[in-house]
Length: 79
Image (tube, rainbow, N blue to C red; front, side):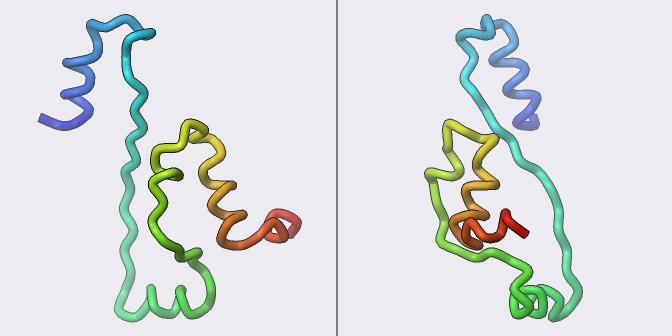
């Protein structure tokens, strides 16, 4: 049983006001040999420590911009 099916089964009978909030992220990225190393060396990636505050933020619409500002600085948004 998938996570989505489980959530539908368990939470569908509940009124909206009683359903917990859930965010699911899914995706795929693949690289050829050495490609990721070259991208990191070029500065294409923002790399930092794991941050549970970002993962469990109560402002999910702001997570991306907050992380970009933290790792790239406010000047990134002025480009």
